[in-house]
Image (cartoon, rainbow, N blue to C red; front, side):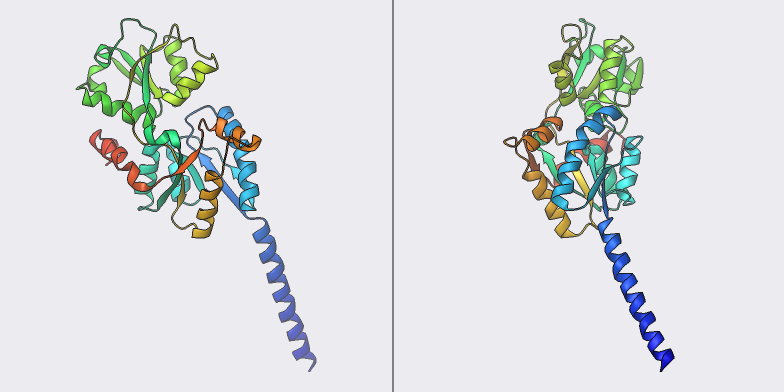
Length: 288
């Protein structure tokens, strides 16, 4: 009788412990997000802070922004489910989709990302077209950047200009702001970057637009998005989409987040939107 009673008590204690630690584990659940490092770590952290706070309230769980060292690391982080959501460029989304066996799911994009553009800039007044880049030193951003490398390269190839053969030197700055700095300092003759960062630098007077000029703007293409892994529960995906679509410039919180994300609103997106990016990557030999 004693041993049976003891056994029952032990079973009850185990059940109670399981409930306690299960609840504690649930309470400590962390939703991790990351972003391609297309700008300085300081700027990325500044842009993420209010969004993290907003998502915590909407999801009812702790949210953490996890910075990564390079574009490839962001792809691996999502593919291996080390993060729950990532801010990708169109090309990194395609890479993540390939790397994860088609399990990368884009949820939302900024309205501007449905018609994104890249710009080519220079301080040399003699450079007025893509053809004028022949024999010059030209900088892209990161090799995995959609707007800082892939699409500018695609439009160069379309214009019968092969960067690897026709440029004196091809450089990779690693980020859009670094490309502006390299061109402004005369380290390269020209550079290609994301139009959004360029316009932000001009508006903030961080670059002298009377000395650094845009000489070519690409046609529009699909670019950035927030992506999750296909294994994420549908209910959580729906919460995320609603949280982004509910952001409004009519509230102080919404305005701060949208301004930092350089948009007026977020809209739904889908994988099919990035087929053109994938085709451009394969055509340029950047995706096998």
